[in-house]
Length: 309
Image 1 (cartoon, one colour):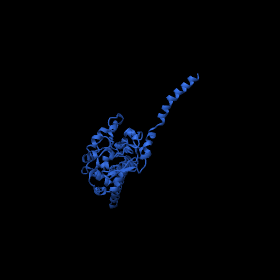
Image 2 (cartoon, helix red, strand yellow):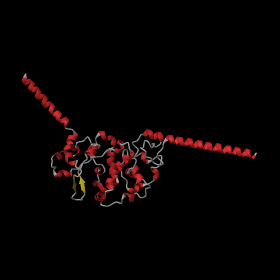
Image 3 (cartoon, rainbow, N blue to C red):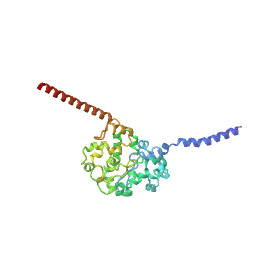
Image 4 (tube, one colour):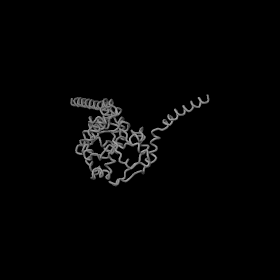
């Protein structure tokens, strides 16, 4: 009997223990081994070819708020990175976003195959080729699809514009990629009225991409094809409906023309923003004013005729 009890106890121990170990080892636990070093903000190295200092730091806070928050580091990176110190050959690891994103059925709604085609039509890829990759815009350790998760338009604008400014306000990076120094953004946008206000309210890609893509367009246009006609945004059929505000309620657009300022978090686009009820009220007031003026004119005419008699 004792033998049976002992054997049963051993069986339970052997069968339960691995499961408990497996459940206790979460993605965060696995990643913690990497983040012990890579969470240090100063972790970086100097590229011996270009002289540019490249950061190897990963912010845990940003990573666990990103679209990749449920992934373990080795889901993307080679499992050989589990050995420390890392093999020097691993620094040449070549990662490509579409290795995962292209054929997965759950990602079909994001049109990654179309994005790949668009990307290769962009001015960045045409001028820089393979020197320019997804990672130059989208940091896989912090990227999130902001327009779909944020209800604050201003927050979306700031987040998306910073993706562009990370290069276009960094002369060292621009020179490394293109071999030239571009004019400052202030100089190249000096034609734009109220420049600072535009940059706070509109994303770079709203003027520098084609609005006809099914998602967010990745065809970055050359500067001579960027939107410069004010009416393209400042009208009832504003291009912003197809870009910045495309994720807002379609029902509100149909009912209120564009979107009222409350829905847009106090954003206001001259010539585009409409409020059905304010429009109706203004027509009523305008109509009553015309009626009042007409009645006043008629009464004065009658009074004048009576005086003449």
